[in-house]
Length: 563
Image (cartoon, rainbow, N blue to C red; front, side):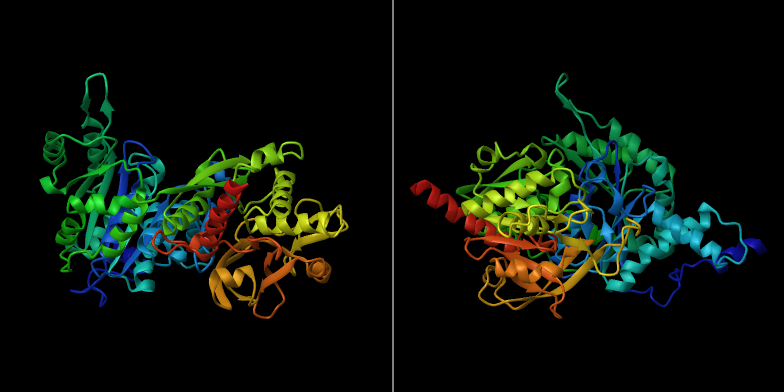
């Protein structure tokens, strides 16, 4: 008993039941787990709930706990995990955080994404520094305490009324067990009135017998209960409406209140999810279970946005030229930002996913001519680069609206250097270290020896925009803040040469040292930006650059129709 007390006293958790931070107005915690299969939409469910609670006047923070052993998704292939989402403070995170920011419209931070790799990294470093005072380091309490500390940290940092935490993976996975144990302990520490558990499961439909099946949900909930977690709400993912008997059956066998079984139906537009869930009184029930007294959600702006989406009567085709186009989630935020811009103009965005490796000088026109605008998004590595350069060349010479993001900006610079300035071997140091004209090269003071993970220029940086430029017309202001994720920059050794040949440097760092944006003034819309504007686009607040591209695409379409 003596030893047990000592361990507890050494715990890094500062947030205990009788802490001064615990009281009538303490932070509430919502944990979202998933069962049966992966990819059910836990992130959309969590994001929708965040939107509903924010619409009730509550301050919301959200986070994702991922069970994989990578320290973060920064070095993972997009084929493995989709895009890497970057927060304002430079954390490389899971793509679900993009859903959280787009739905809730709150900037997330470094405490918004935690992986098993980061947990063990932190714990082992503490052990090496002697912070555990010679204790045997174990999964319980040290790993679980680290997870709990992270969960509590986001609430403290943001002063949130409610913290929504999604647990990645599927209940029953061995990797998720420490996270599930940690959130069980959180519920015990803060009290039942301050923490609830929402379990999202699949209810499959068997066409042969023409019925939905509840057994997978029942088994998943029992698995969760076996770990000491008893869901307060069960969200049923389904492709067609469920029969009333299904709700009663799951409530009975899973030991939840009948109104705590919620239908989550597949929708044509994912931004309909909050409204659909609220029809089932989702946020009402959550507030009741958490003893939150808050007014009904004001969804006026959200519903107005949904009305605009429904009334879209035009369509433009935007080509997205990349090397991961087989997996659309690799460019999720870019695609969403384009759709957001489309909402502003009553326009459906028809995405044309173009593999840059398939583009040659012989077929570039036939592939690209059917597009009303082009996006070349960010990326790393030299695969498909020449196809992207051909794309930028076609857009520049045919006045086809072009938005180059990060690598897409660098591609525009390389193309201009080759074909306008006559530097035929112009390239990036990333692709050709031996090039005599590296118009794109390492950040200052970096070298090829640097590790890949966490060493990029990450997070939000200011940018000064020149008046009278396409950039200024898009933003309408001289200073902006945008998020970055890159290692290579515009090489200032070639700045004067490219500018004198007609490439407009329209945006720089405040000290003028770093080139942030370039454009071709002769074109209606040809912009390259070193940052990632897609991360700051919201469905009801479309990003200026994507609005500019879609507007230019509509004009291009109109001109094409006249010819």
